[in-house]
Amino acid sequence: MVKILFFSPFSILHPTFQTRSKSTQAEAFSLDLIPVEEYQQQLKEKELAGGQLFCENSHNEKIKFSNCPKFQQLQNQGCYGATTYEMAVEMNYVDICAQIDLMKNAYSFEQQYFQLDSPHW
Image 1 (cartoon, rainbow, N blue to C red):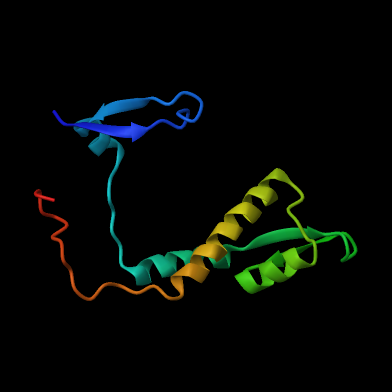
Image 2 (image 1 turned 120 degrees about the vertical axis):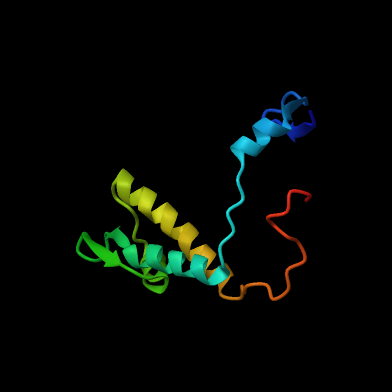
């Protein structure tokens, strides 16, 4: 049995290392690879879901958004999620827009150096 060391989140207060067996680690982690284009499409679908933000300077109304530029514009105007659900959507949308921005320059690899289905790596 191979032991894998991992850093405990509480190690800042109590610097200790814990071990976890390889089989347990493998059960807790799976690597699902998808093409960059497919991931970008999934992000685009999440972006189109949109949401709404409360704007005090717009006669106290909620304004809908369904793309990142509109969302950024509303945030710059001081609009915000008024309910806990809208706050969660807002935080999620910040993440989605950041990922979309990062993925603009991403592309799928042309040459594969590793056989991902090989049991030896």
